[in-house]
Image 1 (tube, protein in one colour):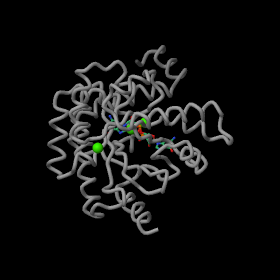
Image 2 (cartoon, protein in one colour):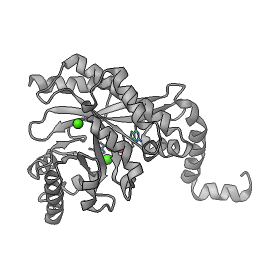
Image 3 (tube, protein in one colour):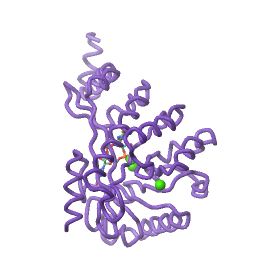
Length: 287
Ligand code: C2E
Ligand code: CA
Ligand code: CA
Ligand code: CA
């Protein structure tokens, strides 16, 4: 790649070139990153829209790369899925998060009026098809002494589009045990709303794009109608609605009026270390 052509290519788009080099480097470093302890988890609070109390948190994984610094999941989750590392990495995230939930419970007892702080963990489609999912989850919960009710697994809408019974079976087993299943990024796929009945989900996570459309005041009346419709359908199917990406108080208020149950976003808190959640929940409990 030291040819004149290669150079011209670099000059044409040095950033794309740098990205390609980085991607190659990341792919090489990824398989050993777990053993080297380079991953860590940040937690972002989930807040009840009605009373503002912290109800739990979503676990979001990061990679502290020795050369590139902190990398967000969008940089390496696709690579981890491609290389198969996602299965042990996902298991590690689940284990850490469940232990964290246990620690929160030890601090607060059964905590807030709503009970113990709950933990939400993202599940990649590759983990869904991995035969060890149910047993691994059971083992992790048992080892930590955490009730399945305290765990919510988030699966994207697109991972479940057209899902057959084989794919849904492990999720059904987990749901029967009391684990909540949330449909993540809801509204970005093209799933048939009637299809929701078939899925073992108990929570819809409304995609950030809906929240963004609440930024202007007054919000687009069509967007309002759509969210209102989704919320009422969800509630009629006994599903709770969580909204992502809430950045302003106006959005929070609008989404509360529309009947959404729980919210997550920078308005409340950015993802952060677990101690941060302690502080937020404590402020909440005392004030
Ligand atoms: P997600 O599950 O939709 O997570 C929400 C993303 O929105 C997070 O990005 C979060 O930091 C960001 N966010 C939260 N509040 C706001 C806000 O108010 N405004 C804006 N603009 N963004 C907000 P993050 O941490 O970069 O994660 C990106 C995606 O990576 C996640 O999207 C999830 O799909 C995936 N991911 C993260 N951790 C894991 C994991 O442990 N396993 C798997 N399979 N995927 C993960
Ligand atoms: Ca998620
Ligand atoms: Ca439950
Ligand atoms: Ca999401």
